Amino acid sequence: MCYKDKMIIALDVQTRTDLDKLTNSLEGTATFVKVGMELFYTFGPSIIIDLKKKGFKVFLDLKIHDIPNTTKSSIKTITRLGADIINVHAAGGIEMMKAAVAGVNEVIAEENKLQRPLLIAVTQLTSTNQETLNQELLISSAIEEAVIQYAKNAKTAGLDGIVSSPLEVTSIKEKLGKDFLCVTPGIRPKGSISDDQKRITTPNEALNFGSDYLVIGRAVTKSADPKTAFNEILKGLK
Image 1 (cartoon, rainbow, N blue to C red):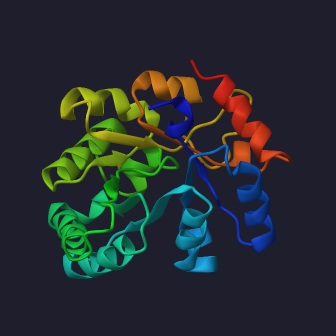
Image 2 (image 1 turned 45 degrees about the vertical axis):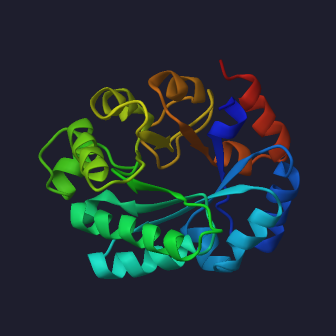
């Protein structure tokens, strides 16, 4: 996989003007985009179809987290939208994640023309630091230990990989295998502001750790020229 195909641009906007500016600039340049809650709740399910028509692969980042039956039903609906990557939250536990896998498999069996999406699980948000984990969430372990346990649960449930900070990727790959996918937000080119994310790295650092996909947002989407910003990051990858 070339570097270009590893970069997922987060389309975190709320207006059609901002969305069109981004997609028109990135069309034919970027391969993959991320539709998160902000974009999905603004435009609804049709946004996936619109982006696919423009030639983008889509990571639908809704972090489904509910009881197993509700999760399965929701995942079946999401799978039918045709996104390339979908996700749940690993905090829901193994049975919930198994229900999500079952939901994907049932839809693919029913609709054999539909390509199976990758199903991954969020471990800990990149805005969570050690203090938040221990004092607010009352999880007594180190962040890396908690992330790895969530990743193990995801693999046990049959998922394709996880979302984590790049800082945990090396350990995850060592313990769960190189084929277990790691999708990593918290990517900031040198000189960028970290904003509300706390566990971050540069694109090159993330790739060296073993990240399979890098989710990049504001460094591209807040640029006056998203295409140029994307290409500048691409040129800096080694």
